[in-house]
Amino acid sequence: MQDLIIDLVQLGFTHNEAVIYVTALEFGPTGANEIGVKANINRATTYSVLESLRKKGMITLVSSEDQRQYRAEAPGSILTLLELQQRELQKRQMRANEVITRLQVFYNQDSAKPKIRYFERVTGLRAMQTEYEMLDEDMIQIVGLDTLKKLYDPAKEQEHARELKRKDRKVKTIIATKQDVSHLDLLNNFEYVVIDPDLIDIKGEMTVCGDIIAVEIQSKTIADTARATLELAWNEAVRLAKIGQEE
Image 1 (cartoon, rainbow, N blue to C red):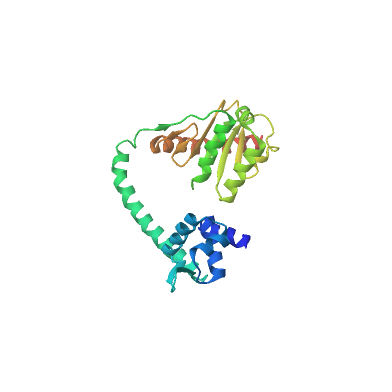
Image 2 (cartoon, helix red, strand yellow):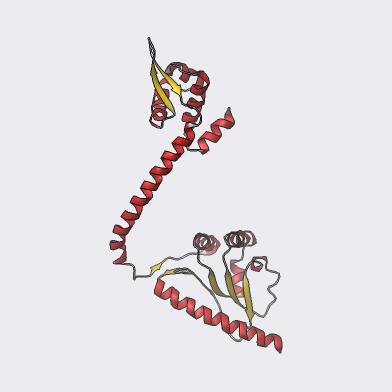
């Protein structure tokens, strides 16, 4: 029975609703007191939950000669309940789209201003990475190896890399270093090119994903400019890397 309770809760029932529904299903038409005693739920809560289930169409109130009784609807009613909830959700989504359109009028008045937030330490970096993971756009970045090593947490970076790979996100990274980076596991799922820091001396890191620039400047104009810059840097880095290999 406990497994059934857990399953019903996962379908959207409260714990008490699940317990009382299963109890009423087992008893057949029964008074609220008997259901409450069997379910080990106090009288006031039992009546409240029965009323909630009645509104959801999972319990029917029936009359007998001496008392009001409650009858559980057939289990197939769960599908009907879910369909009704889905319709209600669709109505809310349509309403939300209307409200968002109206609210956008106020939001646009300030949309040209960059939104700046500051992230510190490794925990801040992970928070920023989580936001990147929620977006659909690919990423492009340039980073100095010293910076990469300071921020590198193998467990967290692998978690980030796995999530990007799961969502089939593409990441292009330019790394300025004289060292071998092939041992860095986090680069396994990324497309990267290594250039000599004598050519481009990068002390920090810049990443662009959607309209967000790492550190973060959230502005389409600035993000588009930074993205174009990084694309040019990427193409040039690939060219320089090929020249270095040929030499």
